[in-house]
Image 1 (cartoon, helix red, strand yellow):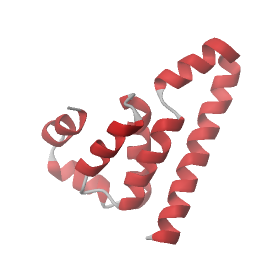
Image 2: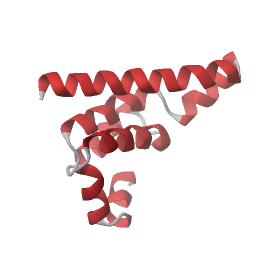
Image 3: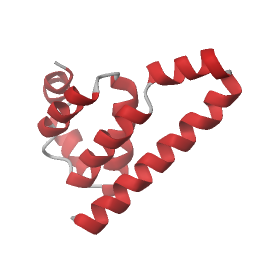
Image 4: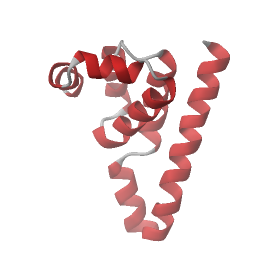
Length: 108
């Protein structure tokens, strides 16, 4: 449902403009993964439907989603405290995104 909504609600020209910029497309899909709160099995279906984006950007979506999302951030804040979550979530986001980009550059 999320993938269909994105492809229908967001104009195709906007998606294509975003997809044409490698750095922004990786950040956009990684940010989308944080916001969607979907399980890692459904991530693959959503990533496959975003075919206008590069494989590296979709890899970032698949890598960041299971590592950092709003549910995990809230659980970490509840268990370990807000200060921990405020440091851990951005660090994990950065590392997962960087690994996806490096892997995408090496393999693709």
